[in-house]
Image: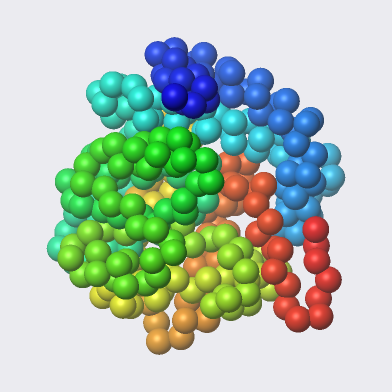
Amino acid sequence: MTHPGILFMRALSHLPLGAVRGLGTLLGRLLFVLARSRRRVALINLRLAYPQWSEAERVALARRNFVYFAQAFLDRSWLWHAHPGLVRQRLRITGSVDDLTREGAVVMFAPHFYGMDAGGSAVMQQIDRPACTIYSTQPNPALDEWMQAGRQRFGDATLLSRTEGVKPIVRALREGKMLYLLPDMDLGPTESVFVPFYGVPTATVPSLSRFAKLGHARVVPVVTRLTDFGYEVKVHPAWPDYPSADATADAALMNQRLQGYIDEMPEQYYWVHKRFKTRPPGEASFY
């Protein structure tokens, strides 16, 4: 039996984009009121990242953040079910595309903006090159199958389970696959280093430089913005100074550059995640 949520998303895929986004606006406003724990997380994150803002400014941005969260979630309806031509029309890749297509291994640094699924779909659909990404299995089998199918819908896409470790990732890079990597989350103290993120010591997994080094790959940032027409997927120039011989310095540089991307559109970043959850020994939790 098909999950009712999947049936709803399939039905939603036939609506005009404006209608989908309108529903997302209503859902996001409702979630801001009802999802109190996530609202609290977002506001704590914003206080840490933007202490110079007033509380009213942070609350206003958090409201918009929840709307973008809901809109991006409902956009999976057409991303994963609409006609491929319509999907292509709504996904525009801009910037240094040659850094993805020229010879040599590539790790795409894809930060957790709400358009991350759209960015992955755009790359898989419009860049003629095999790619892979790391996947965490969902507890509901029907939803897990749906998400895997959606993320493998276009191109030559491979999902690598997070539980399988490093070897399949490095093998994929050395076989010529691009890696769509989202390393900017707090995954706990294991293998993390504490480096600044908005001036706060933050547990950061140095996987970006590690995979680039092991796979002999260049790092190309891919930042996705939700727009009125769909999404803009901006390919930034490859980082010429990355990775270095110092994994901790690389993690700090990643966070520094990520801050620049976030500051251009803070309302679309994944502030509902407890990014500052893991603290150095002896330091109290922010949450």
